[in-house]
Image (tube, rainbow, N blue to C red; front, side, top):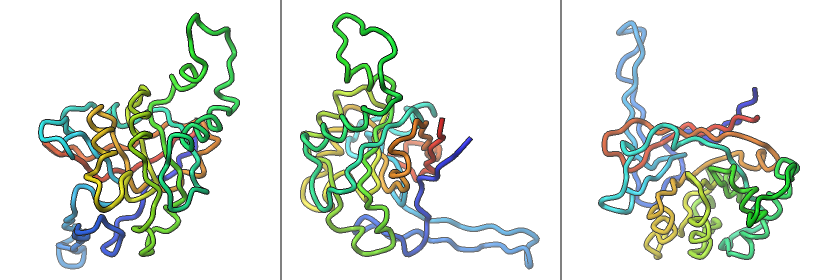
Length: 235
């Protein structure tokens, strides 16, 4: 069994959404003085590699308590946008990346199609989490991580909502620009209860892999989001 870690390290100087205070890790007890070591941890719920539920942008949206643990794991597929640079992911680019990803041998037909079945729909039917690999995770720790990262156009966000997905993920700070648009892609996706995972890493190593994604949140009452330890289990 091979596990790929998709999670960025939590540090006090880590990249953060503008205006978000950094996490704090304070040693409160030590082995030398207390016989055991314990830390106090303080951080915002959307710090580091984390997920968003509908309650993040909708007052009456579903929160962490409204989902079973199975909502936060499932079969994954990675789309390659690593050559895009500081651009928006448009429908044409999305379809091109999707067609390339679905050309992998694991999606090739072994049985006759059902009547009326669309080939792309058949190949996508086994996918529960769709990931956008931009390569932006390589900038983690540098100021450039927060500037110019690829984002989802509203049209692409709407396309994603037509797929039968549990969630999506990206290796950048957000699926939306950091300023000015009112988190429109978030709203489009979360209105359809598609979980959003941000600040992932190592997606490039999964482009040709058949894998299961696991990104379980903390069990926070009423929580609209949570840091996760995201991993991929290679089949």
